Length: 196
Image (cartoon, one colour):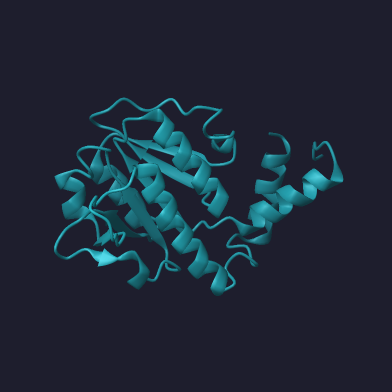
């Protein structure tokens, strides 16, 4: 039997669960600042991303703040990896195309990408960016166009910019109005959320 405080809360859980975008994933590679990680989790929840992959083999796994994440870690699952190849293999087995955020000669503008496909976005360390191993492993290099003197954004802001472009594209295709889950899978997710 479902536990929930009000019918209104149940309706919200059902609506949010149905809109989750299981075909969109974020991978954080060695992001150092836990406030950035928490802010990214908040953005992921806001656009309906159900899982974030945490790839940490240089930095320690981050402690995600309940305050700066606004409890989004409660609604966004985490999967931890310590090796790039394990993370990549897992994503490929799940059918994801993998895009790494990096300034390079062959990087593609995020506004020219089809982010309605099954895509994982890799975001790297605040100072080093994504690792050389990851650069070689991703399917595409992507960048956010900028018009100012400074050619970088805070990693949590950059992630939000990319995710909101993905949300815009997906909303235009009606992807938020129909669950990607089978009926019984959606029901199971709703039941789990009702117990949180």
